[in-house]
Length: 154
Image 1 (cartoon, one colour):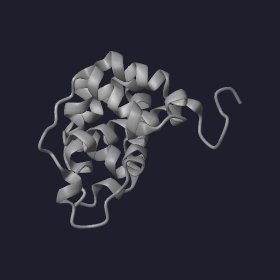
Image 2 (image 1 turned 90 degrees about the vertical axis):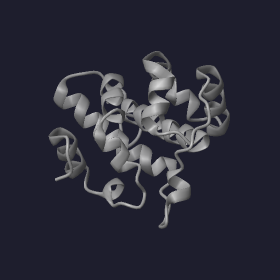
Image 3 (image 1 turned 90 degrees about the horizontal axis):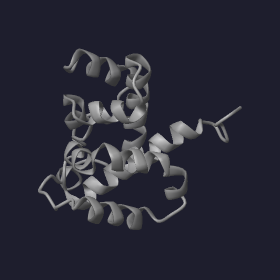
């Protein structure tokens, strides 16, 4: 199968890495995911997505530092990891949640994944997913998607 080297397509793996890197940068700089996405901008996010298969074999801390410096991402005060009173999901765990939602939004709305990514991270559901004291990040992907589509928690 073209673009399929493992259990998931290359595009899915690239989106997963992109979302995980966004979460990693947000944690490192204590910013909301929307702030990170908006500061990185569409062009940098598209570059991350396009080069994800290469970046994935590099140290994520180094890759994140390069993008933090390039986009001049300042340290913020949003610390959802520090505020978490339960088990903290990894940046890979959260990357998977966002990947599934973004992929579904892209398919439904017939837009490319970077456009869908920008929409999802700038929607109300992003703050809900990033509240690690709630249950949203480990809810069923179809439930998260329906909440996104309805623009409210159901």
